[in-house]
Length: 198
Length: 198
DNA sequence: ATCATAAGTAAACAAACATTTACTTACTTT
DNA sequence: AAAGTAAGTAAATGTTTGTTTACTTATGAT
Image (cartoon, rainbow over all chains, first blue to last red; front, side, top):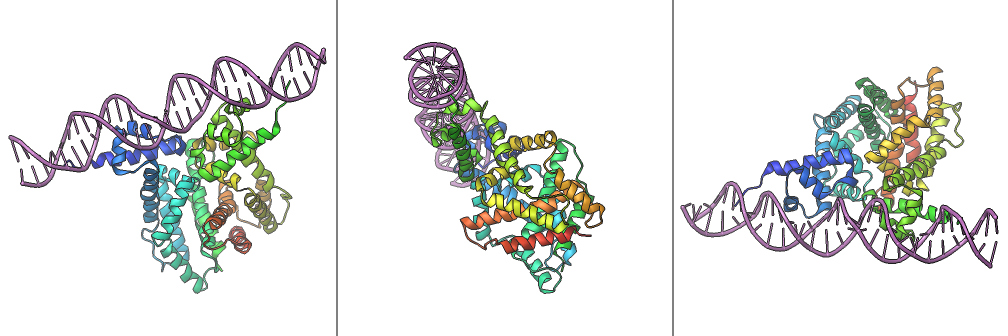
């Protein structure tokens, strides 16, 4: 049996992310993707049932999975609160900085009903990547270090400003306004930490 | 001369937003829209040059413009810091709660290169809706009430958690997990305020 | 009342779409 | 070295896409 050419598989995914970042999800077609990846359309359908299946797997594996792994690197729930938060922020920002196409599709995960649904269903199945972070927050809340808030509140306060700054960072690359420096990033992180402290 | 039927114009916009919210921007086609709005495709092209023109105008007028107007309602740059922030948050949350399709397209504004570009260019031309808020922050920073941070940092800390909570709010309507209450909202707002205080 | 005119329609256009068919290629197993 | 088989291709499938053409309708101005 002829073995799969893994380079082609990877090319398909990489170039798909590229097209989505540059032209938008709404402008990604299977034929365009096949041509750009130097592959026959049929080749994509060997691994993926159809376009939706492909997009969901691209999103889950290449974006969500990779992001979650990167965010938790060298993070321990037992860390001192400020250090833990800084680690999470630094990990996330580094991942996106080196991976702009992943950031682009991540944003579509918050817009597209298809990807959003996939995200939610994964959250249920996978036992939630957020759980080490949840334990981290619970420990600090119980110790009286931070306010006690529901999970979704922590999520909103802790992570969304980081996303927004990442957004601004990429916007500045395209049309330089004011550069989002590591200093700005650190200052925001401090503000978020202070807001949660008791 | 036969006058325009304003009801039809409005139907086109309303139904477009609805389709985008329910099926996603990537599944909105001009023919589908025309049929759903009970209108000939040609009718859409009377007011709009093409699909991109339509989407940009829909986004700018129906979403960005309406949102910005709603957020600034009864807000004054001279307000006490905590009160000002609470007003902005309450205004924004109320707008989206009553206007889910607008929220959906707003999210696409952060994903789609087409809409994102339109957003940025508008920021430059229109003199920025953010300027009353900027003045508010500047006044409070000068008075020593809050930290001095660059504009994009304020934006990230002040607004993005509100967006994230709105997101969770709508997710809970679809698949009830934990309801994002006004209490959670207020607690988050307090955390954000505290984080910025000096 | 009728005319001028833009609003509006139904049907059609080529181009692009997701997916499949019919076939060839390359590698493992024997 | 030959056979078996899944990977891979090029070209075609019918459908849907954005947009236009050729025509009809409704209304303010004359």
